[in-house]
Image (spheres, rainbow, N blue to C red):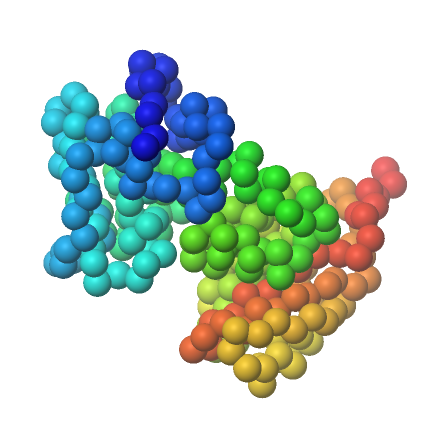
Length: 279
Ligand SMILES: [Zn+2]
């Protein structure tokens, strides 16, 4: 049974602060993270998996948020249910969030962008909390192989071991990685979106709804069986534009993960270290 000293959370307001406190109080936290046990330790006395009409998760807590219940849509996929639980737990633990929440799919996919409404900022924060708690930074960064050069096999194994969807794992992988690495998500050869590490300075040129570049390995991998990976390389100009400060390497490595039903993820990185431009 997990026990947490709740007094220590009193002044914490940010998702990462709260999750860091949880992980420091549970030094031998198992992976995948036992979300339900953590929820129980902070006062969630009931988690019900049930059919919910039009939303994915809900929080019903007392006004002071000392105890509460969470409802999760049982019709959703396992990983979405887990993410929803992390999201509702975020609403419960983040002080300025409401004590009665109902969250739909749009709330769960709210990402950082300009011009978010105050309601969207709350949802974004709950999503950040969910990603933090499902993939705590310390544990995610110390995963075997993570500190080597980027690797699609490592990312797939990591998402699997943390019991999160591949996409949630990939976003976390990019957010935390110390090397320049990006992942482009596409469906039927149309780009959906991409994410990149802060060390990846280049602009990824194909944007949302653009076709994947004809020179990319995705085209060659299109006949690969589902759930397989394919490695190749392309001219960097296939994927990225010039940067003000860094020289564009001639080639870019592509590791393509052919998922199911036309969904593909492509990891992009470079063979050698990036070189700065001379002033
Ligand atoms: Zn929400």
